[in-house]
Length: 123
Image (cartoon, rainbow, N blue to C red):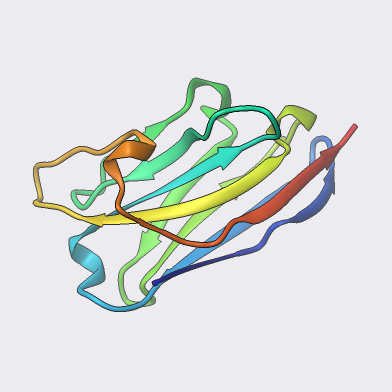
């Protein structure tokens, strides 16, 4: 089970930190990703942190967003800085148990999804 927290309304240029808490299973064996879906658009990858610690970011958020994990808290964080109105979307976290060498990056790679959290960036 995954629970996402931290969405809200922020002005352009501001920051938010999203948290994804994963319950059940051995957290350190999971890849966890953040994805977003804006109205009328497909769900897209924002950032993924794999079991090895390797990360993937969408080009549109590179240099602005950071993803990290705390295995002791079973939590993955998405730090979002320099937010833009085009970052407005519902953000979802997802997880999948993997082997150490697997690198996941697309929504289709993930099997367990949490509820979304709305992020709205005003101009």
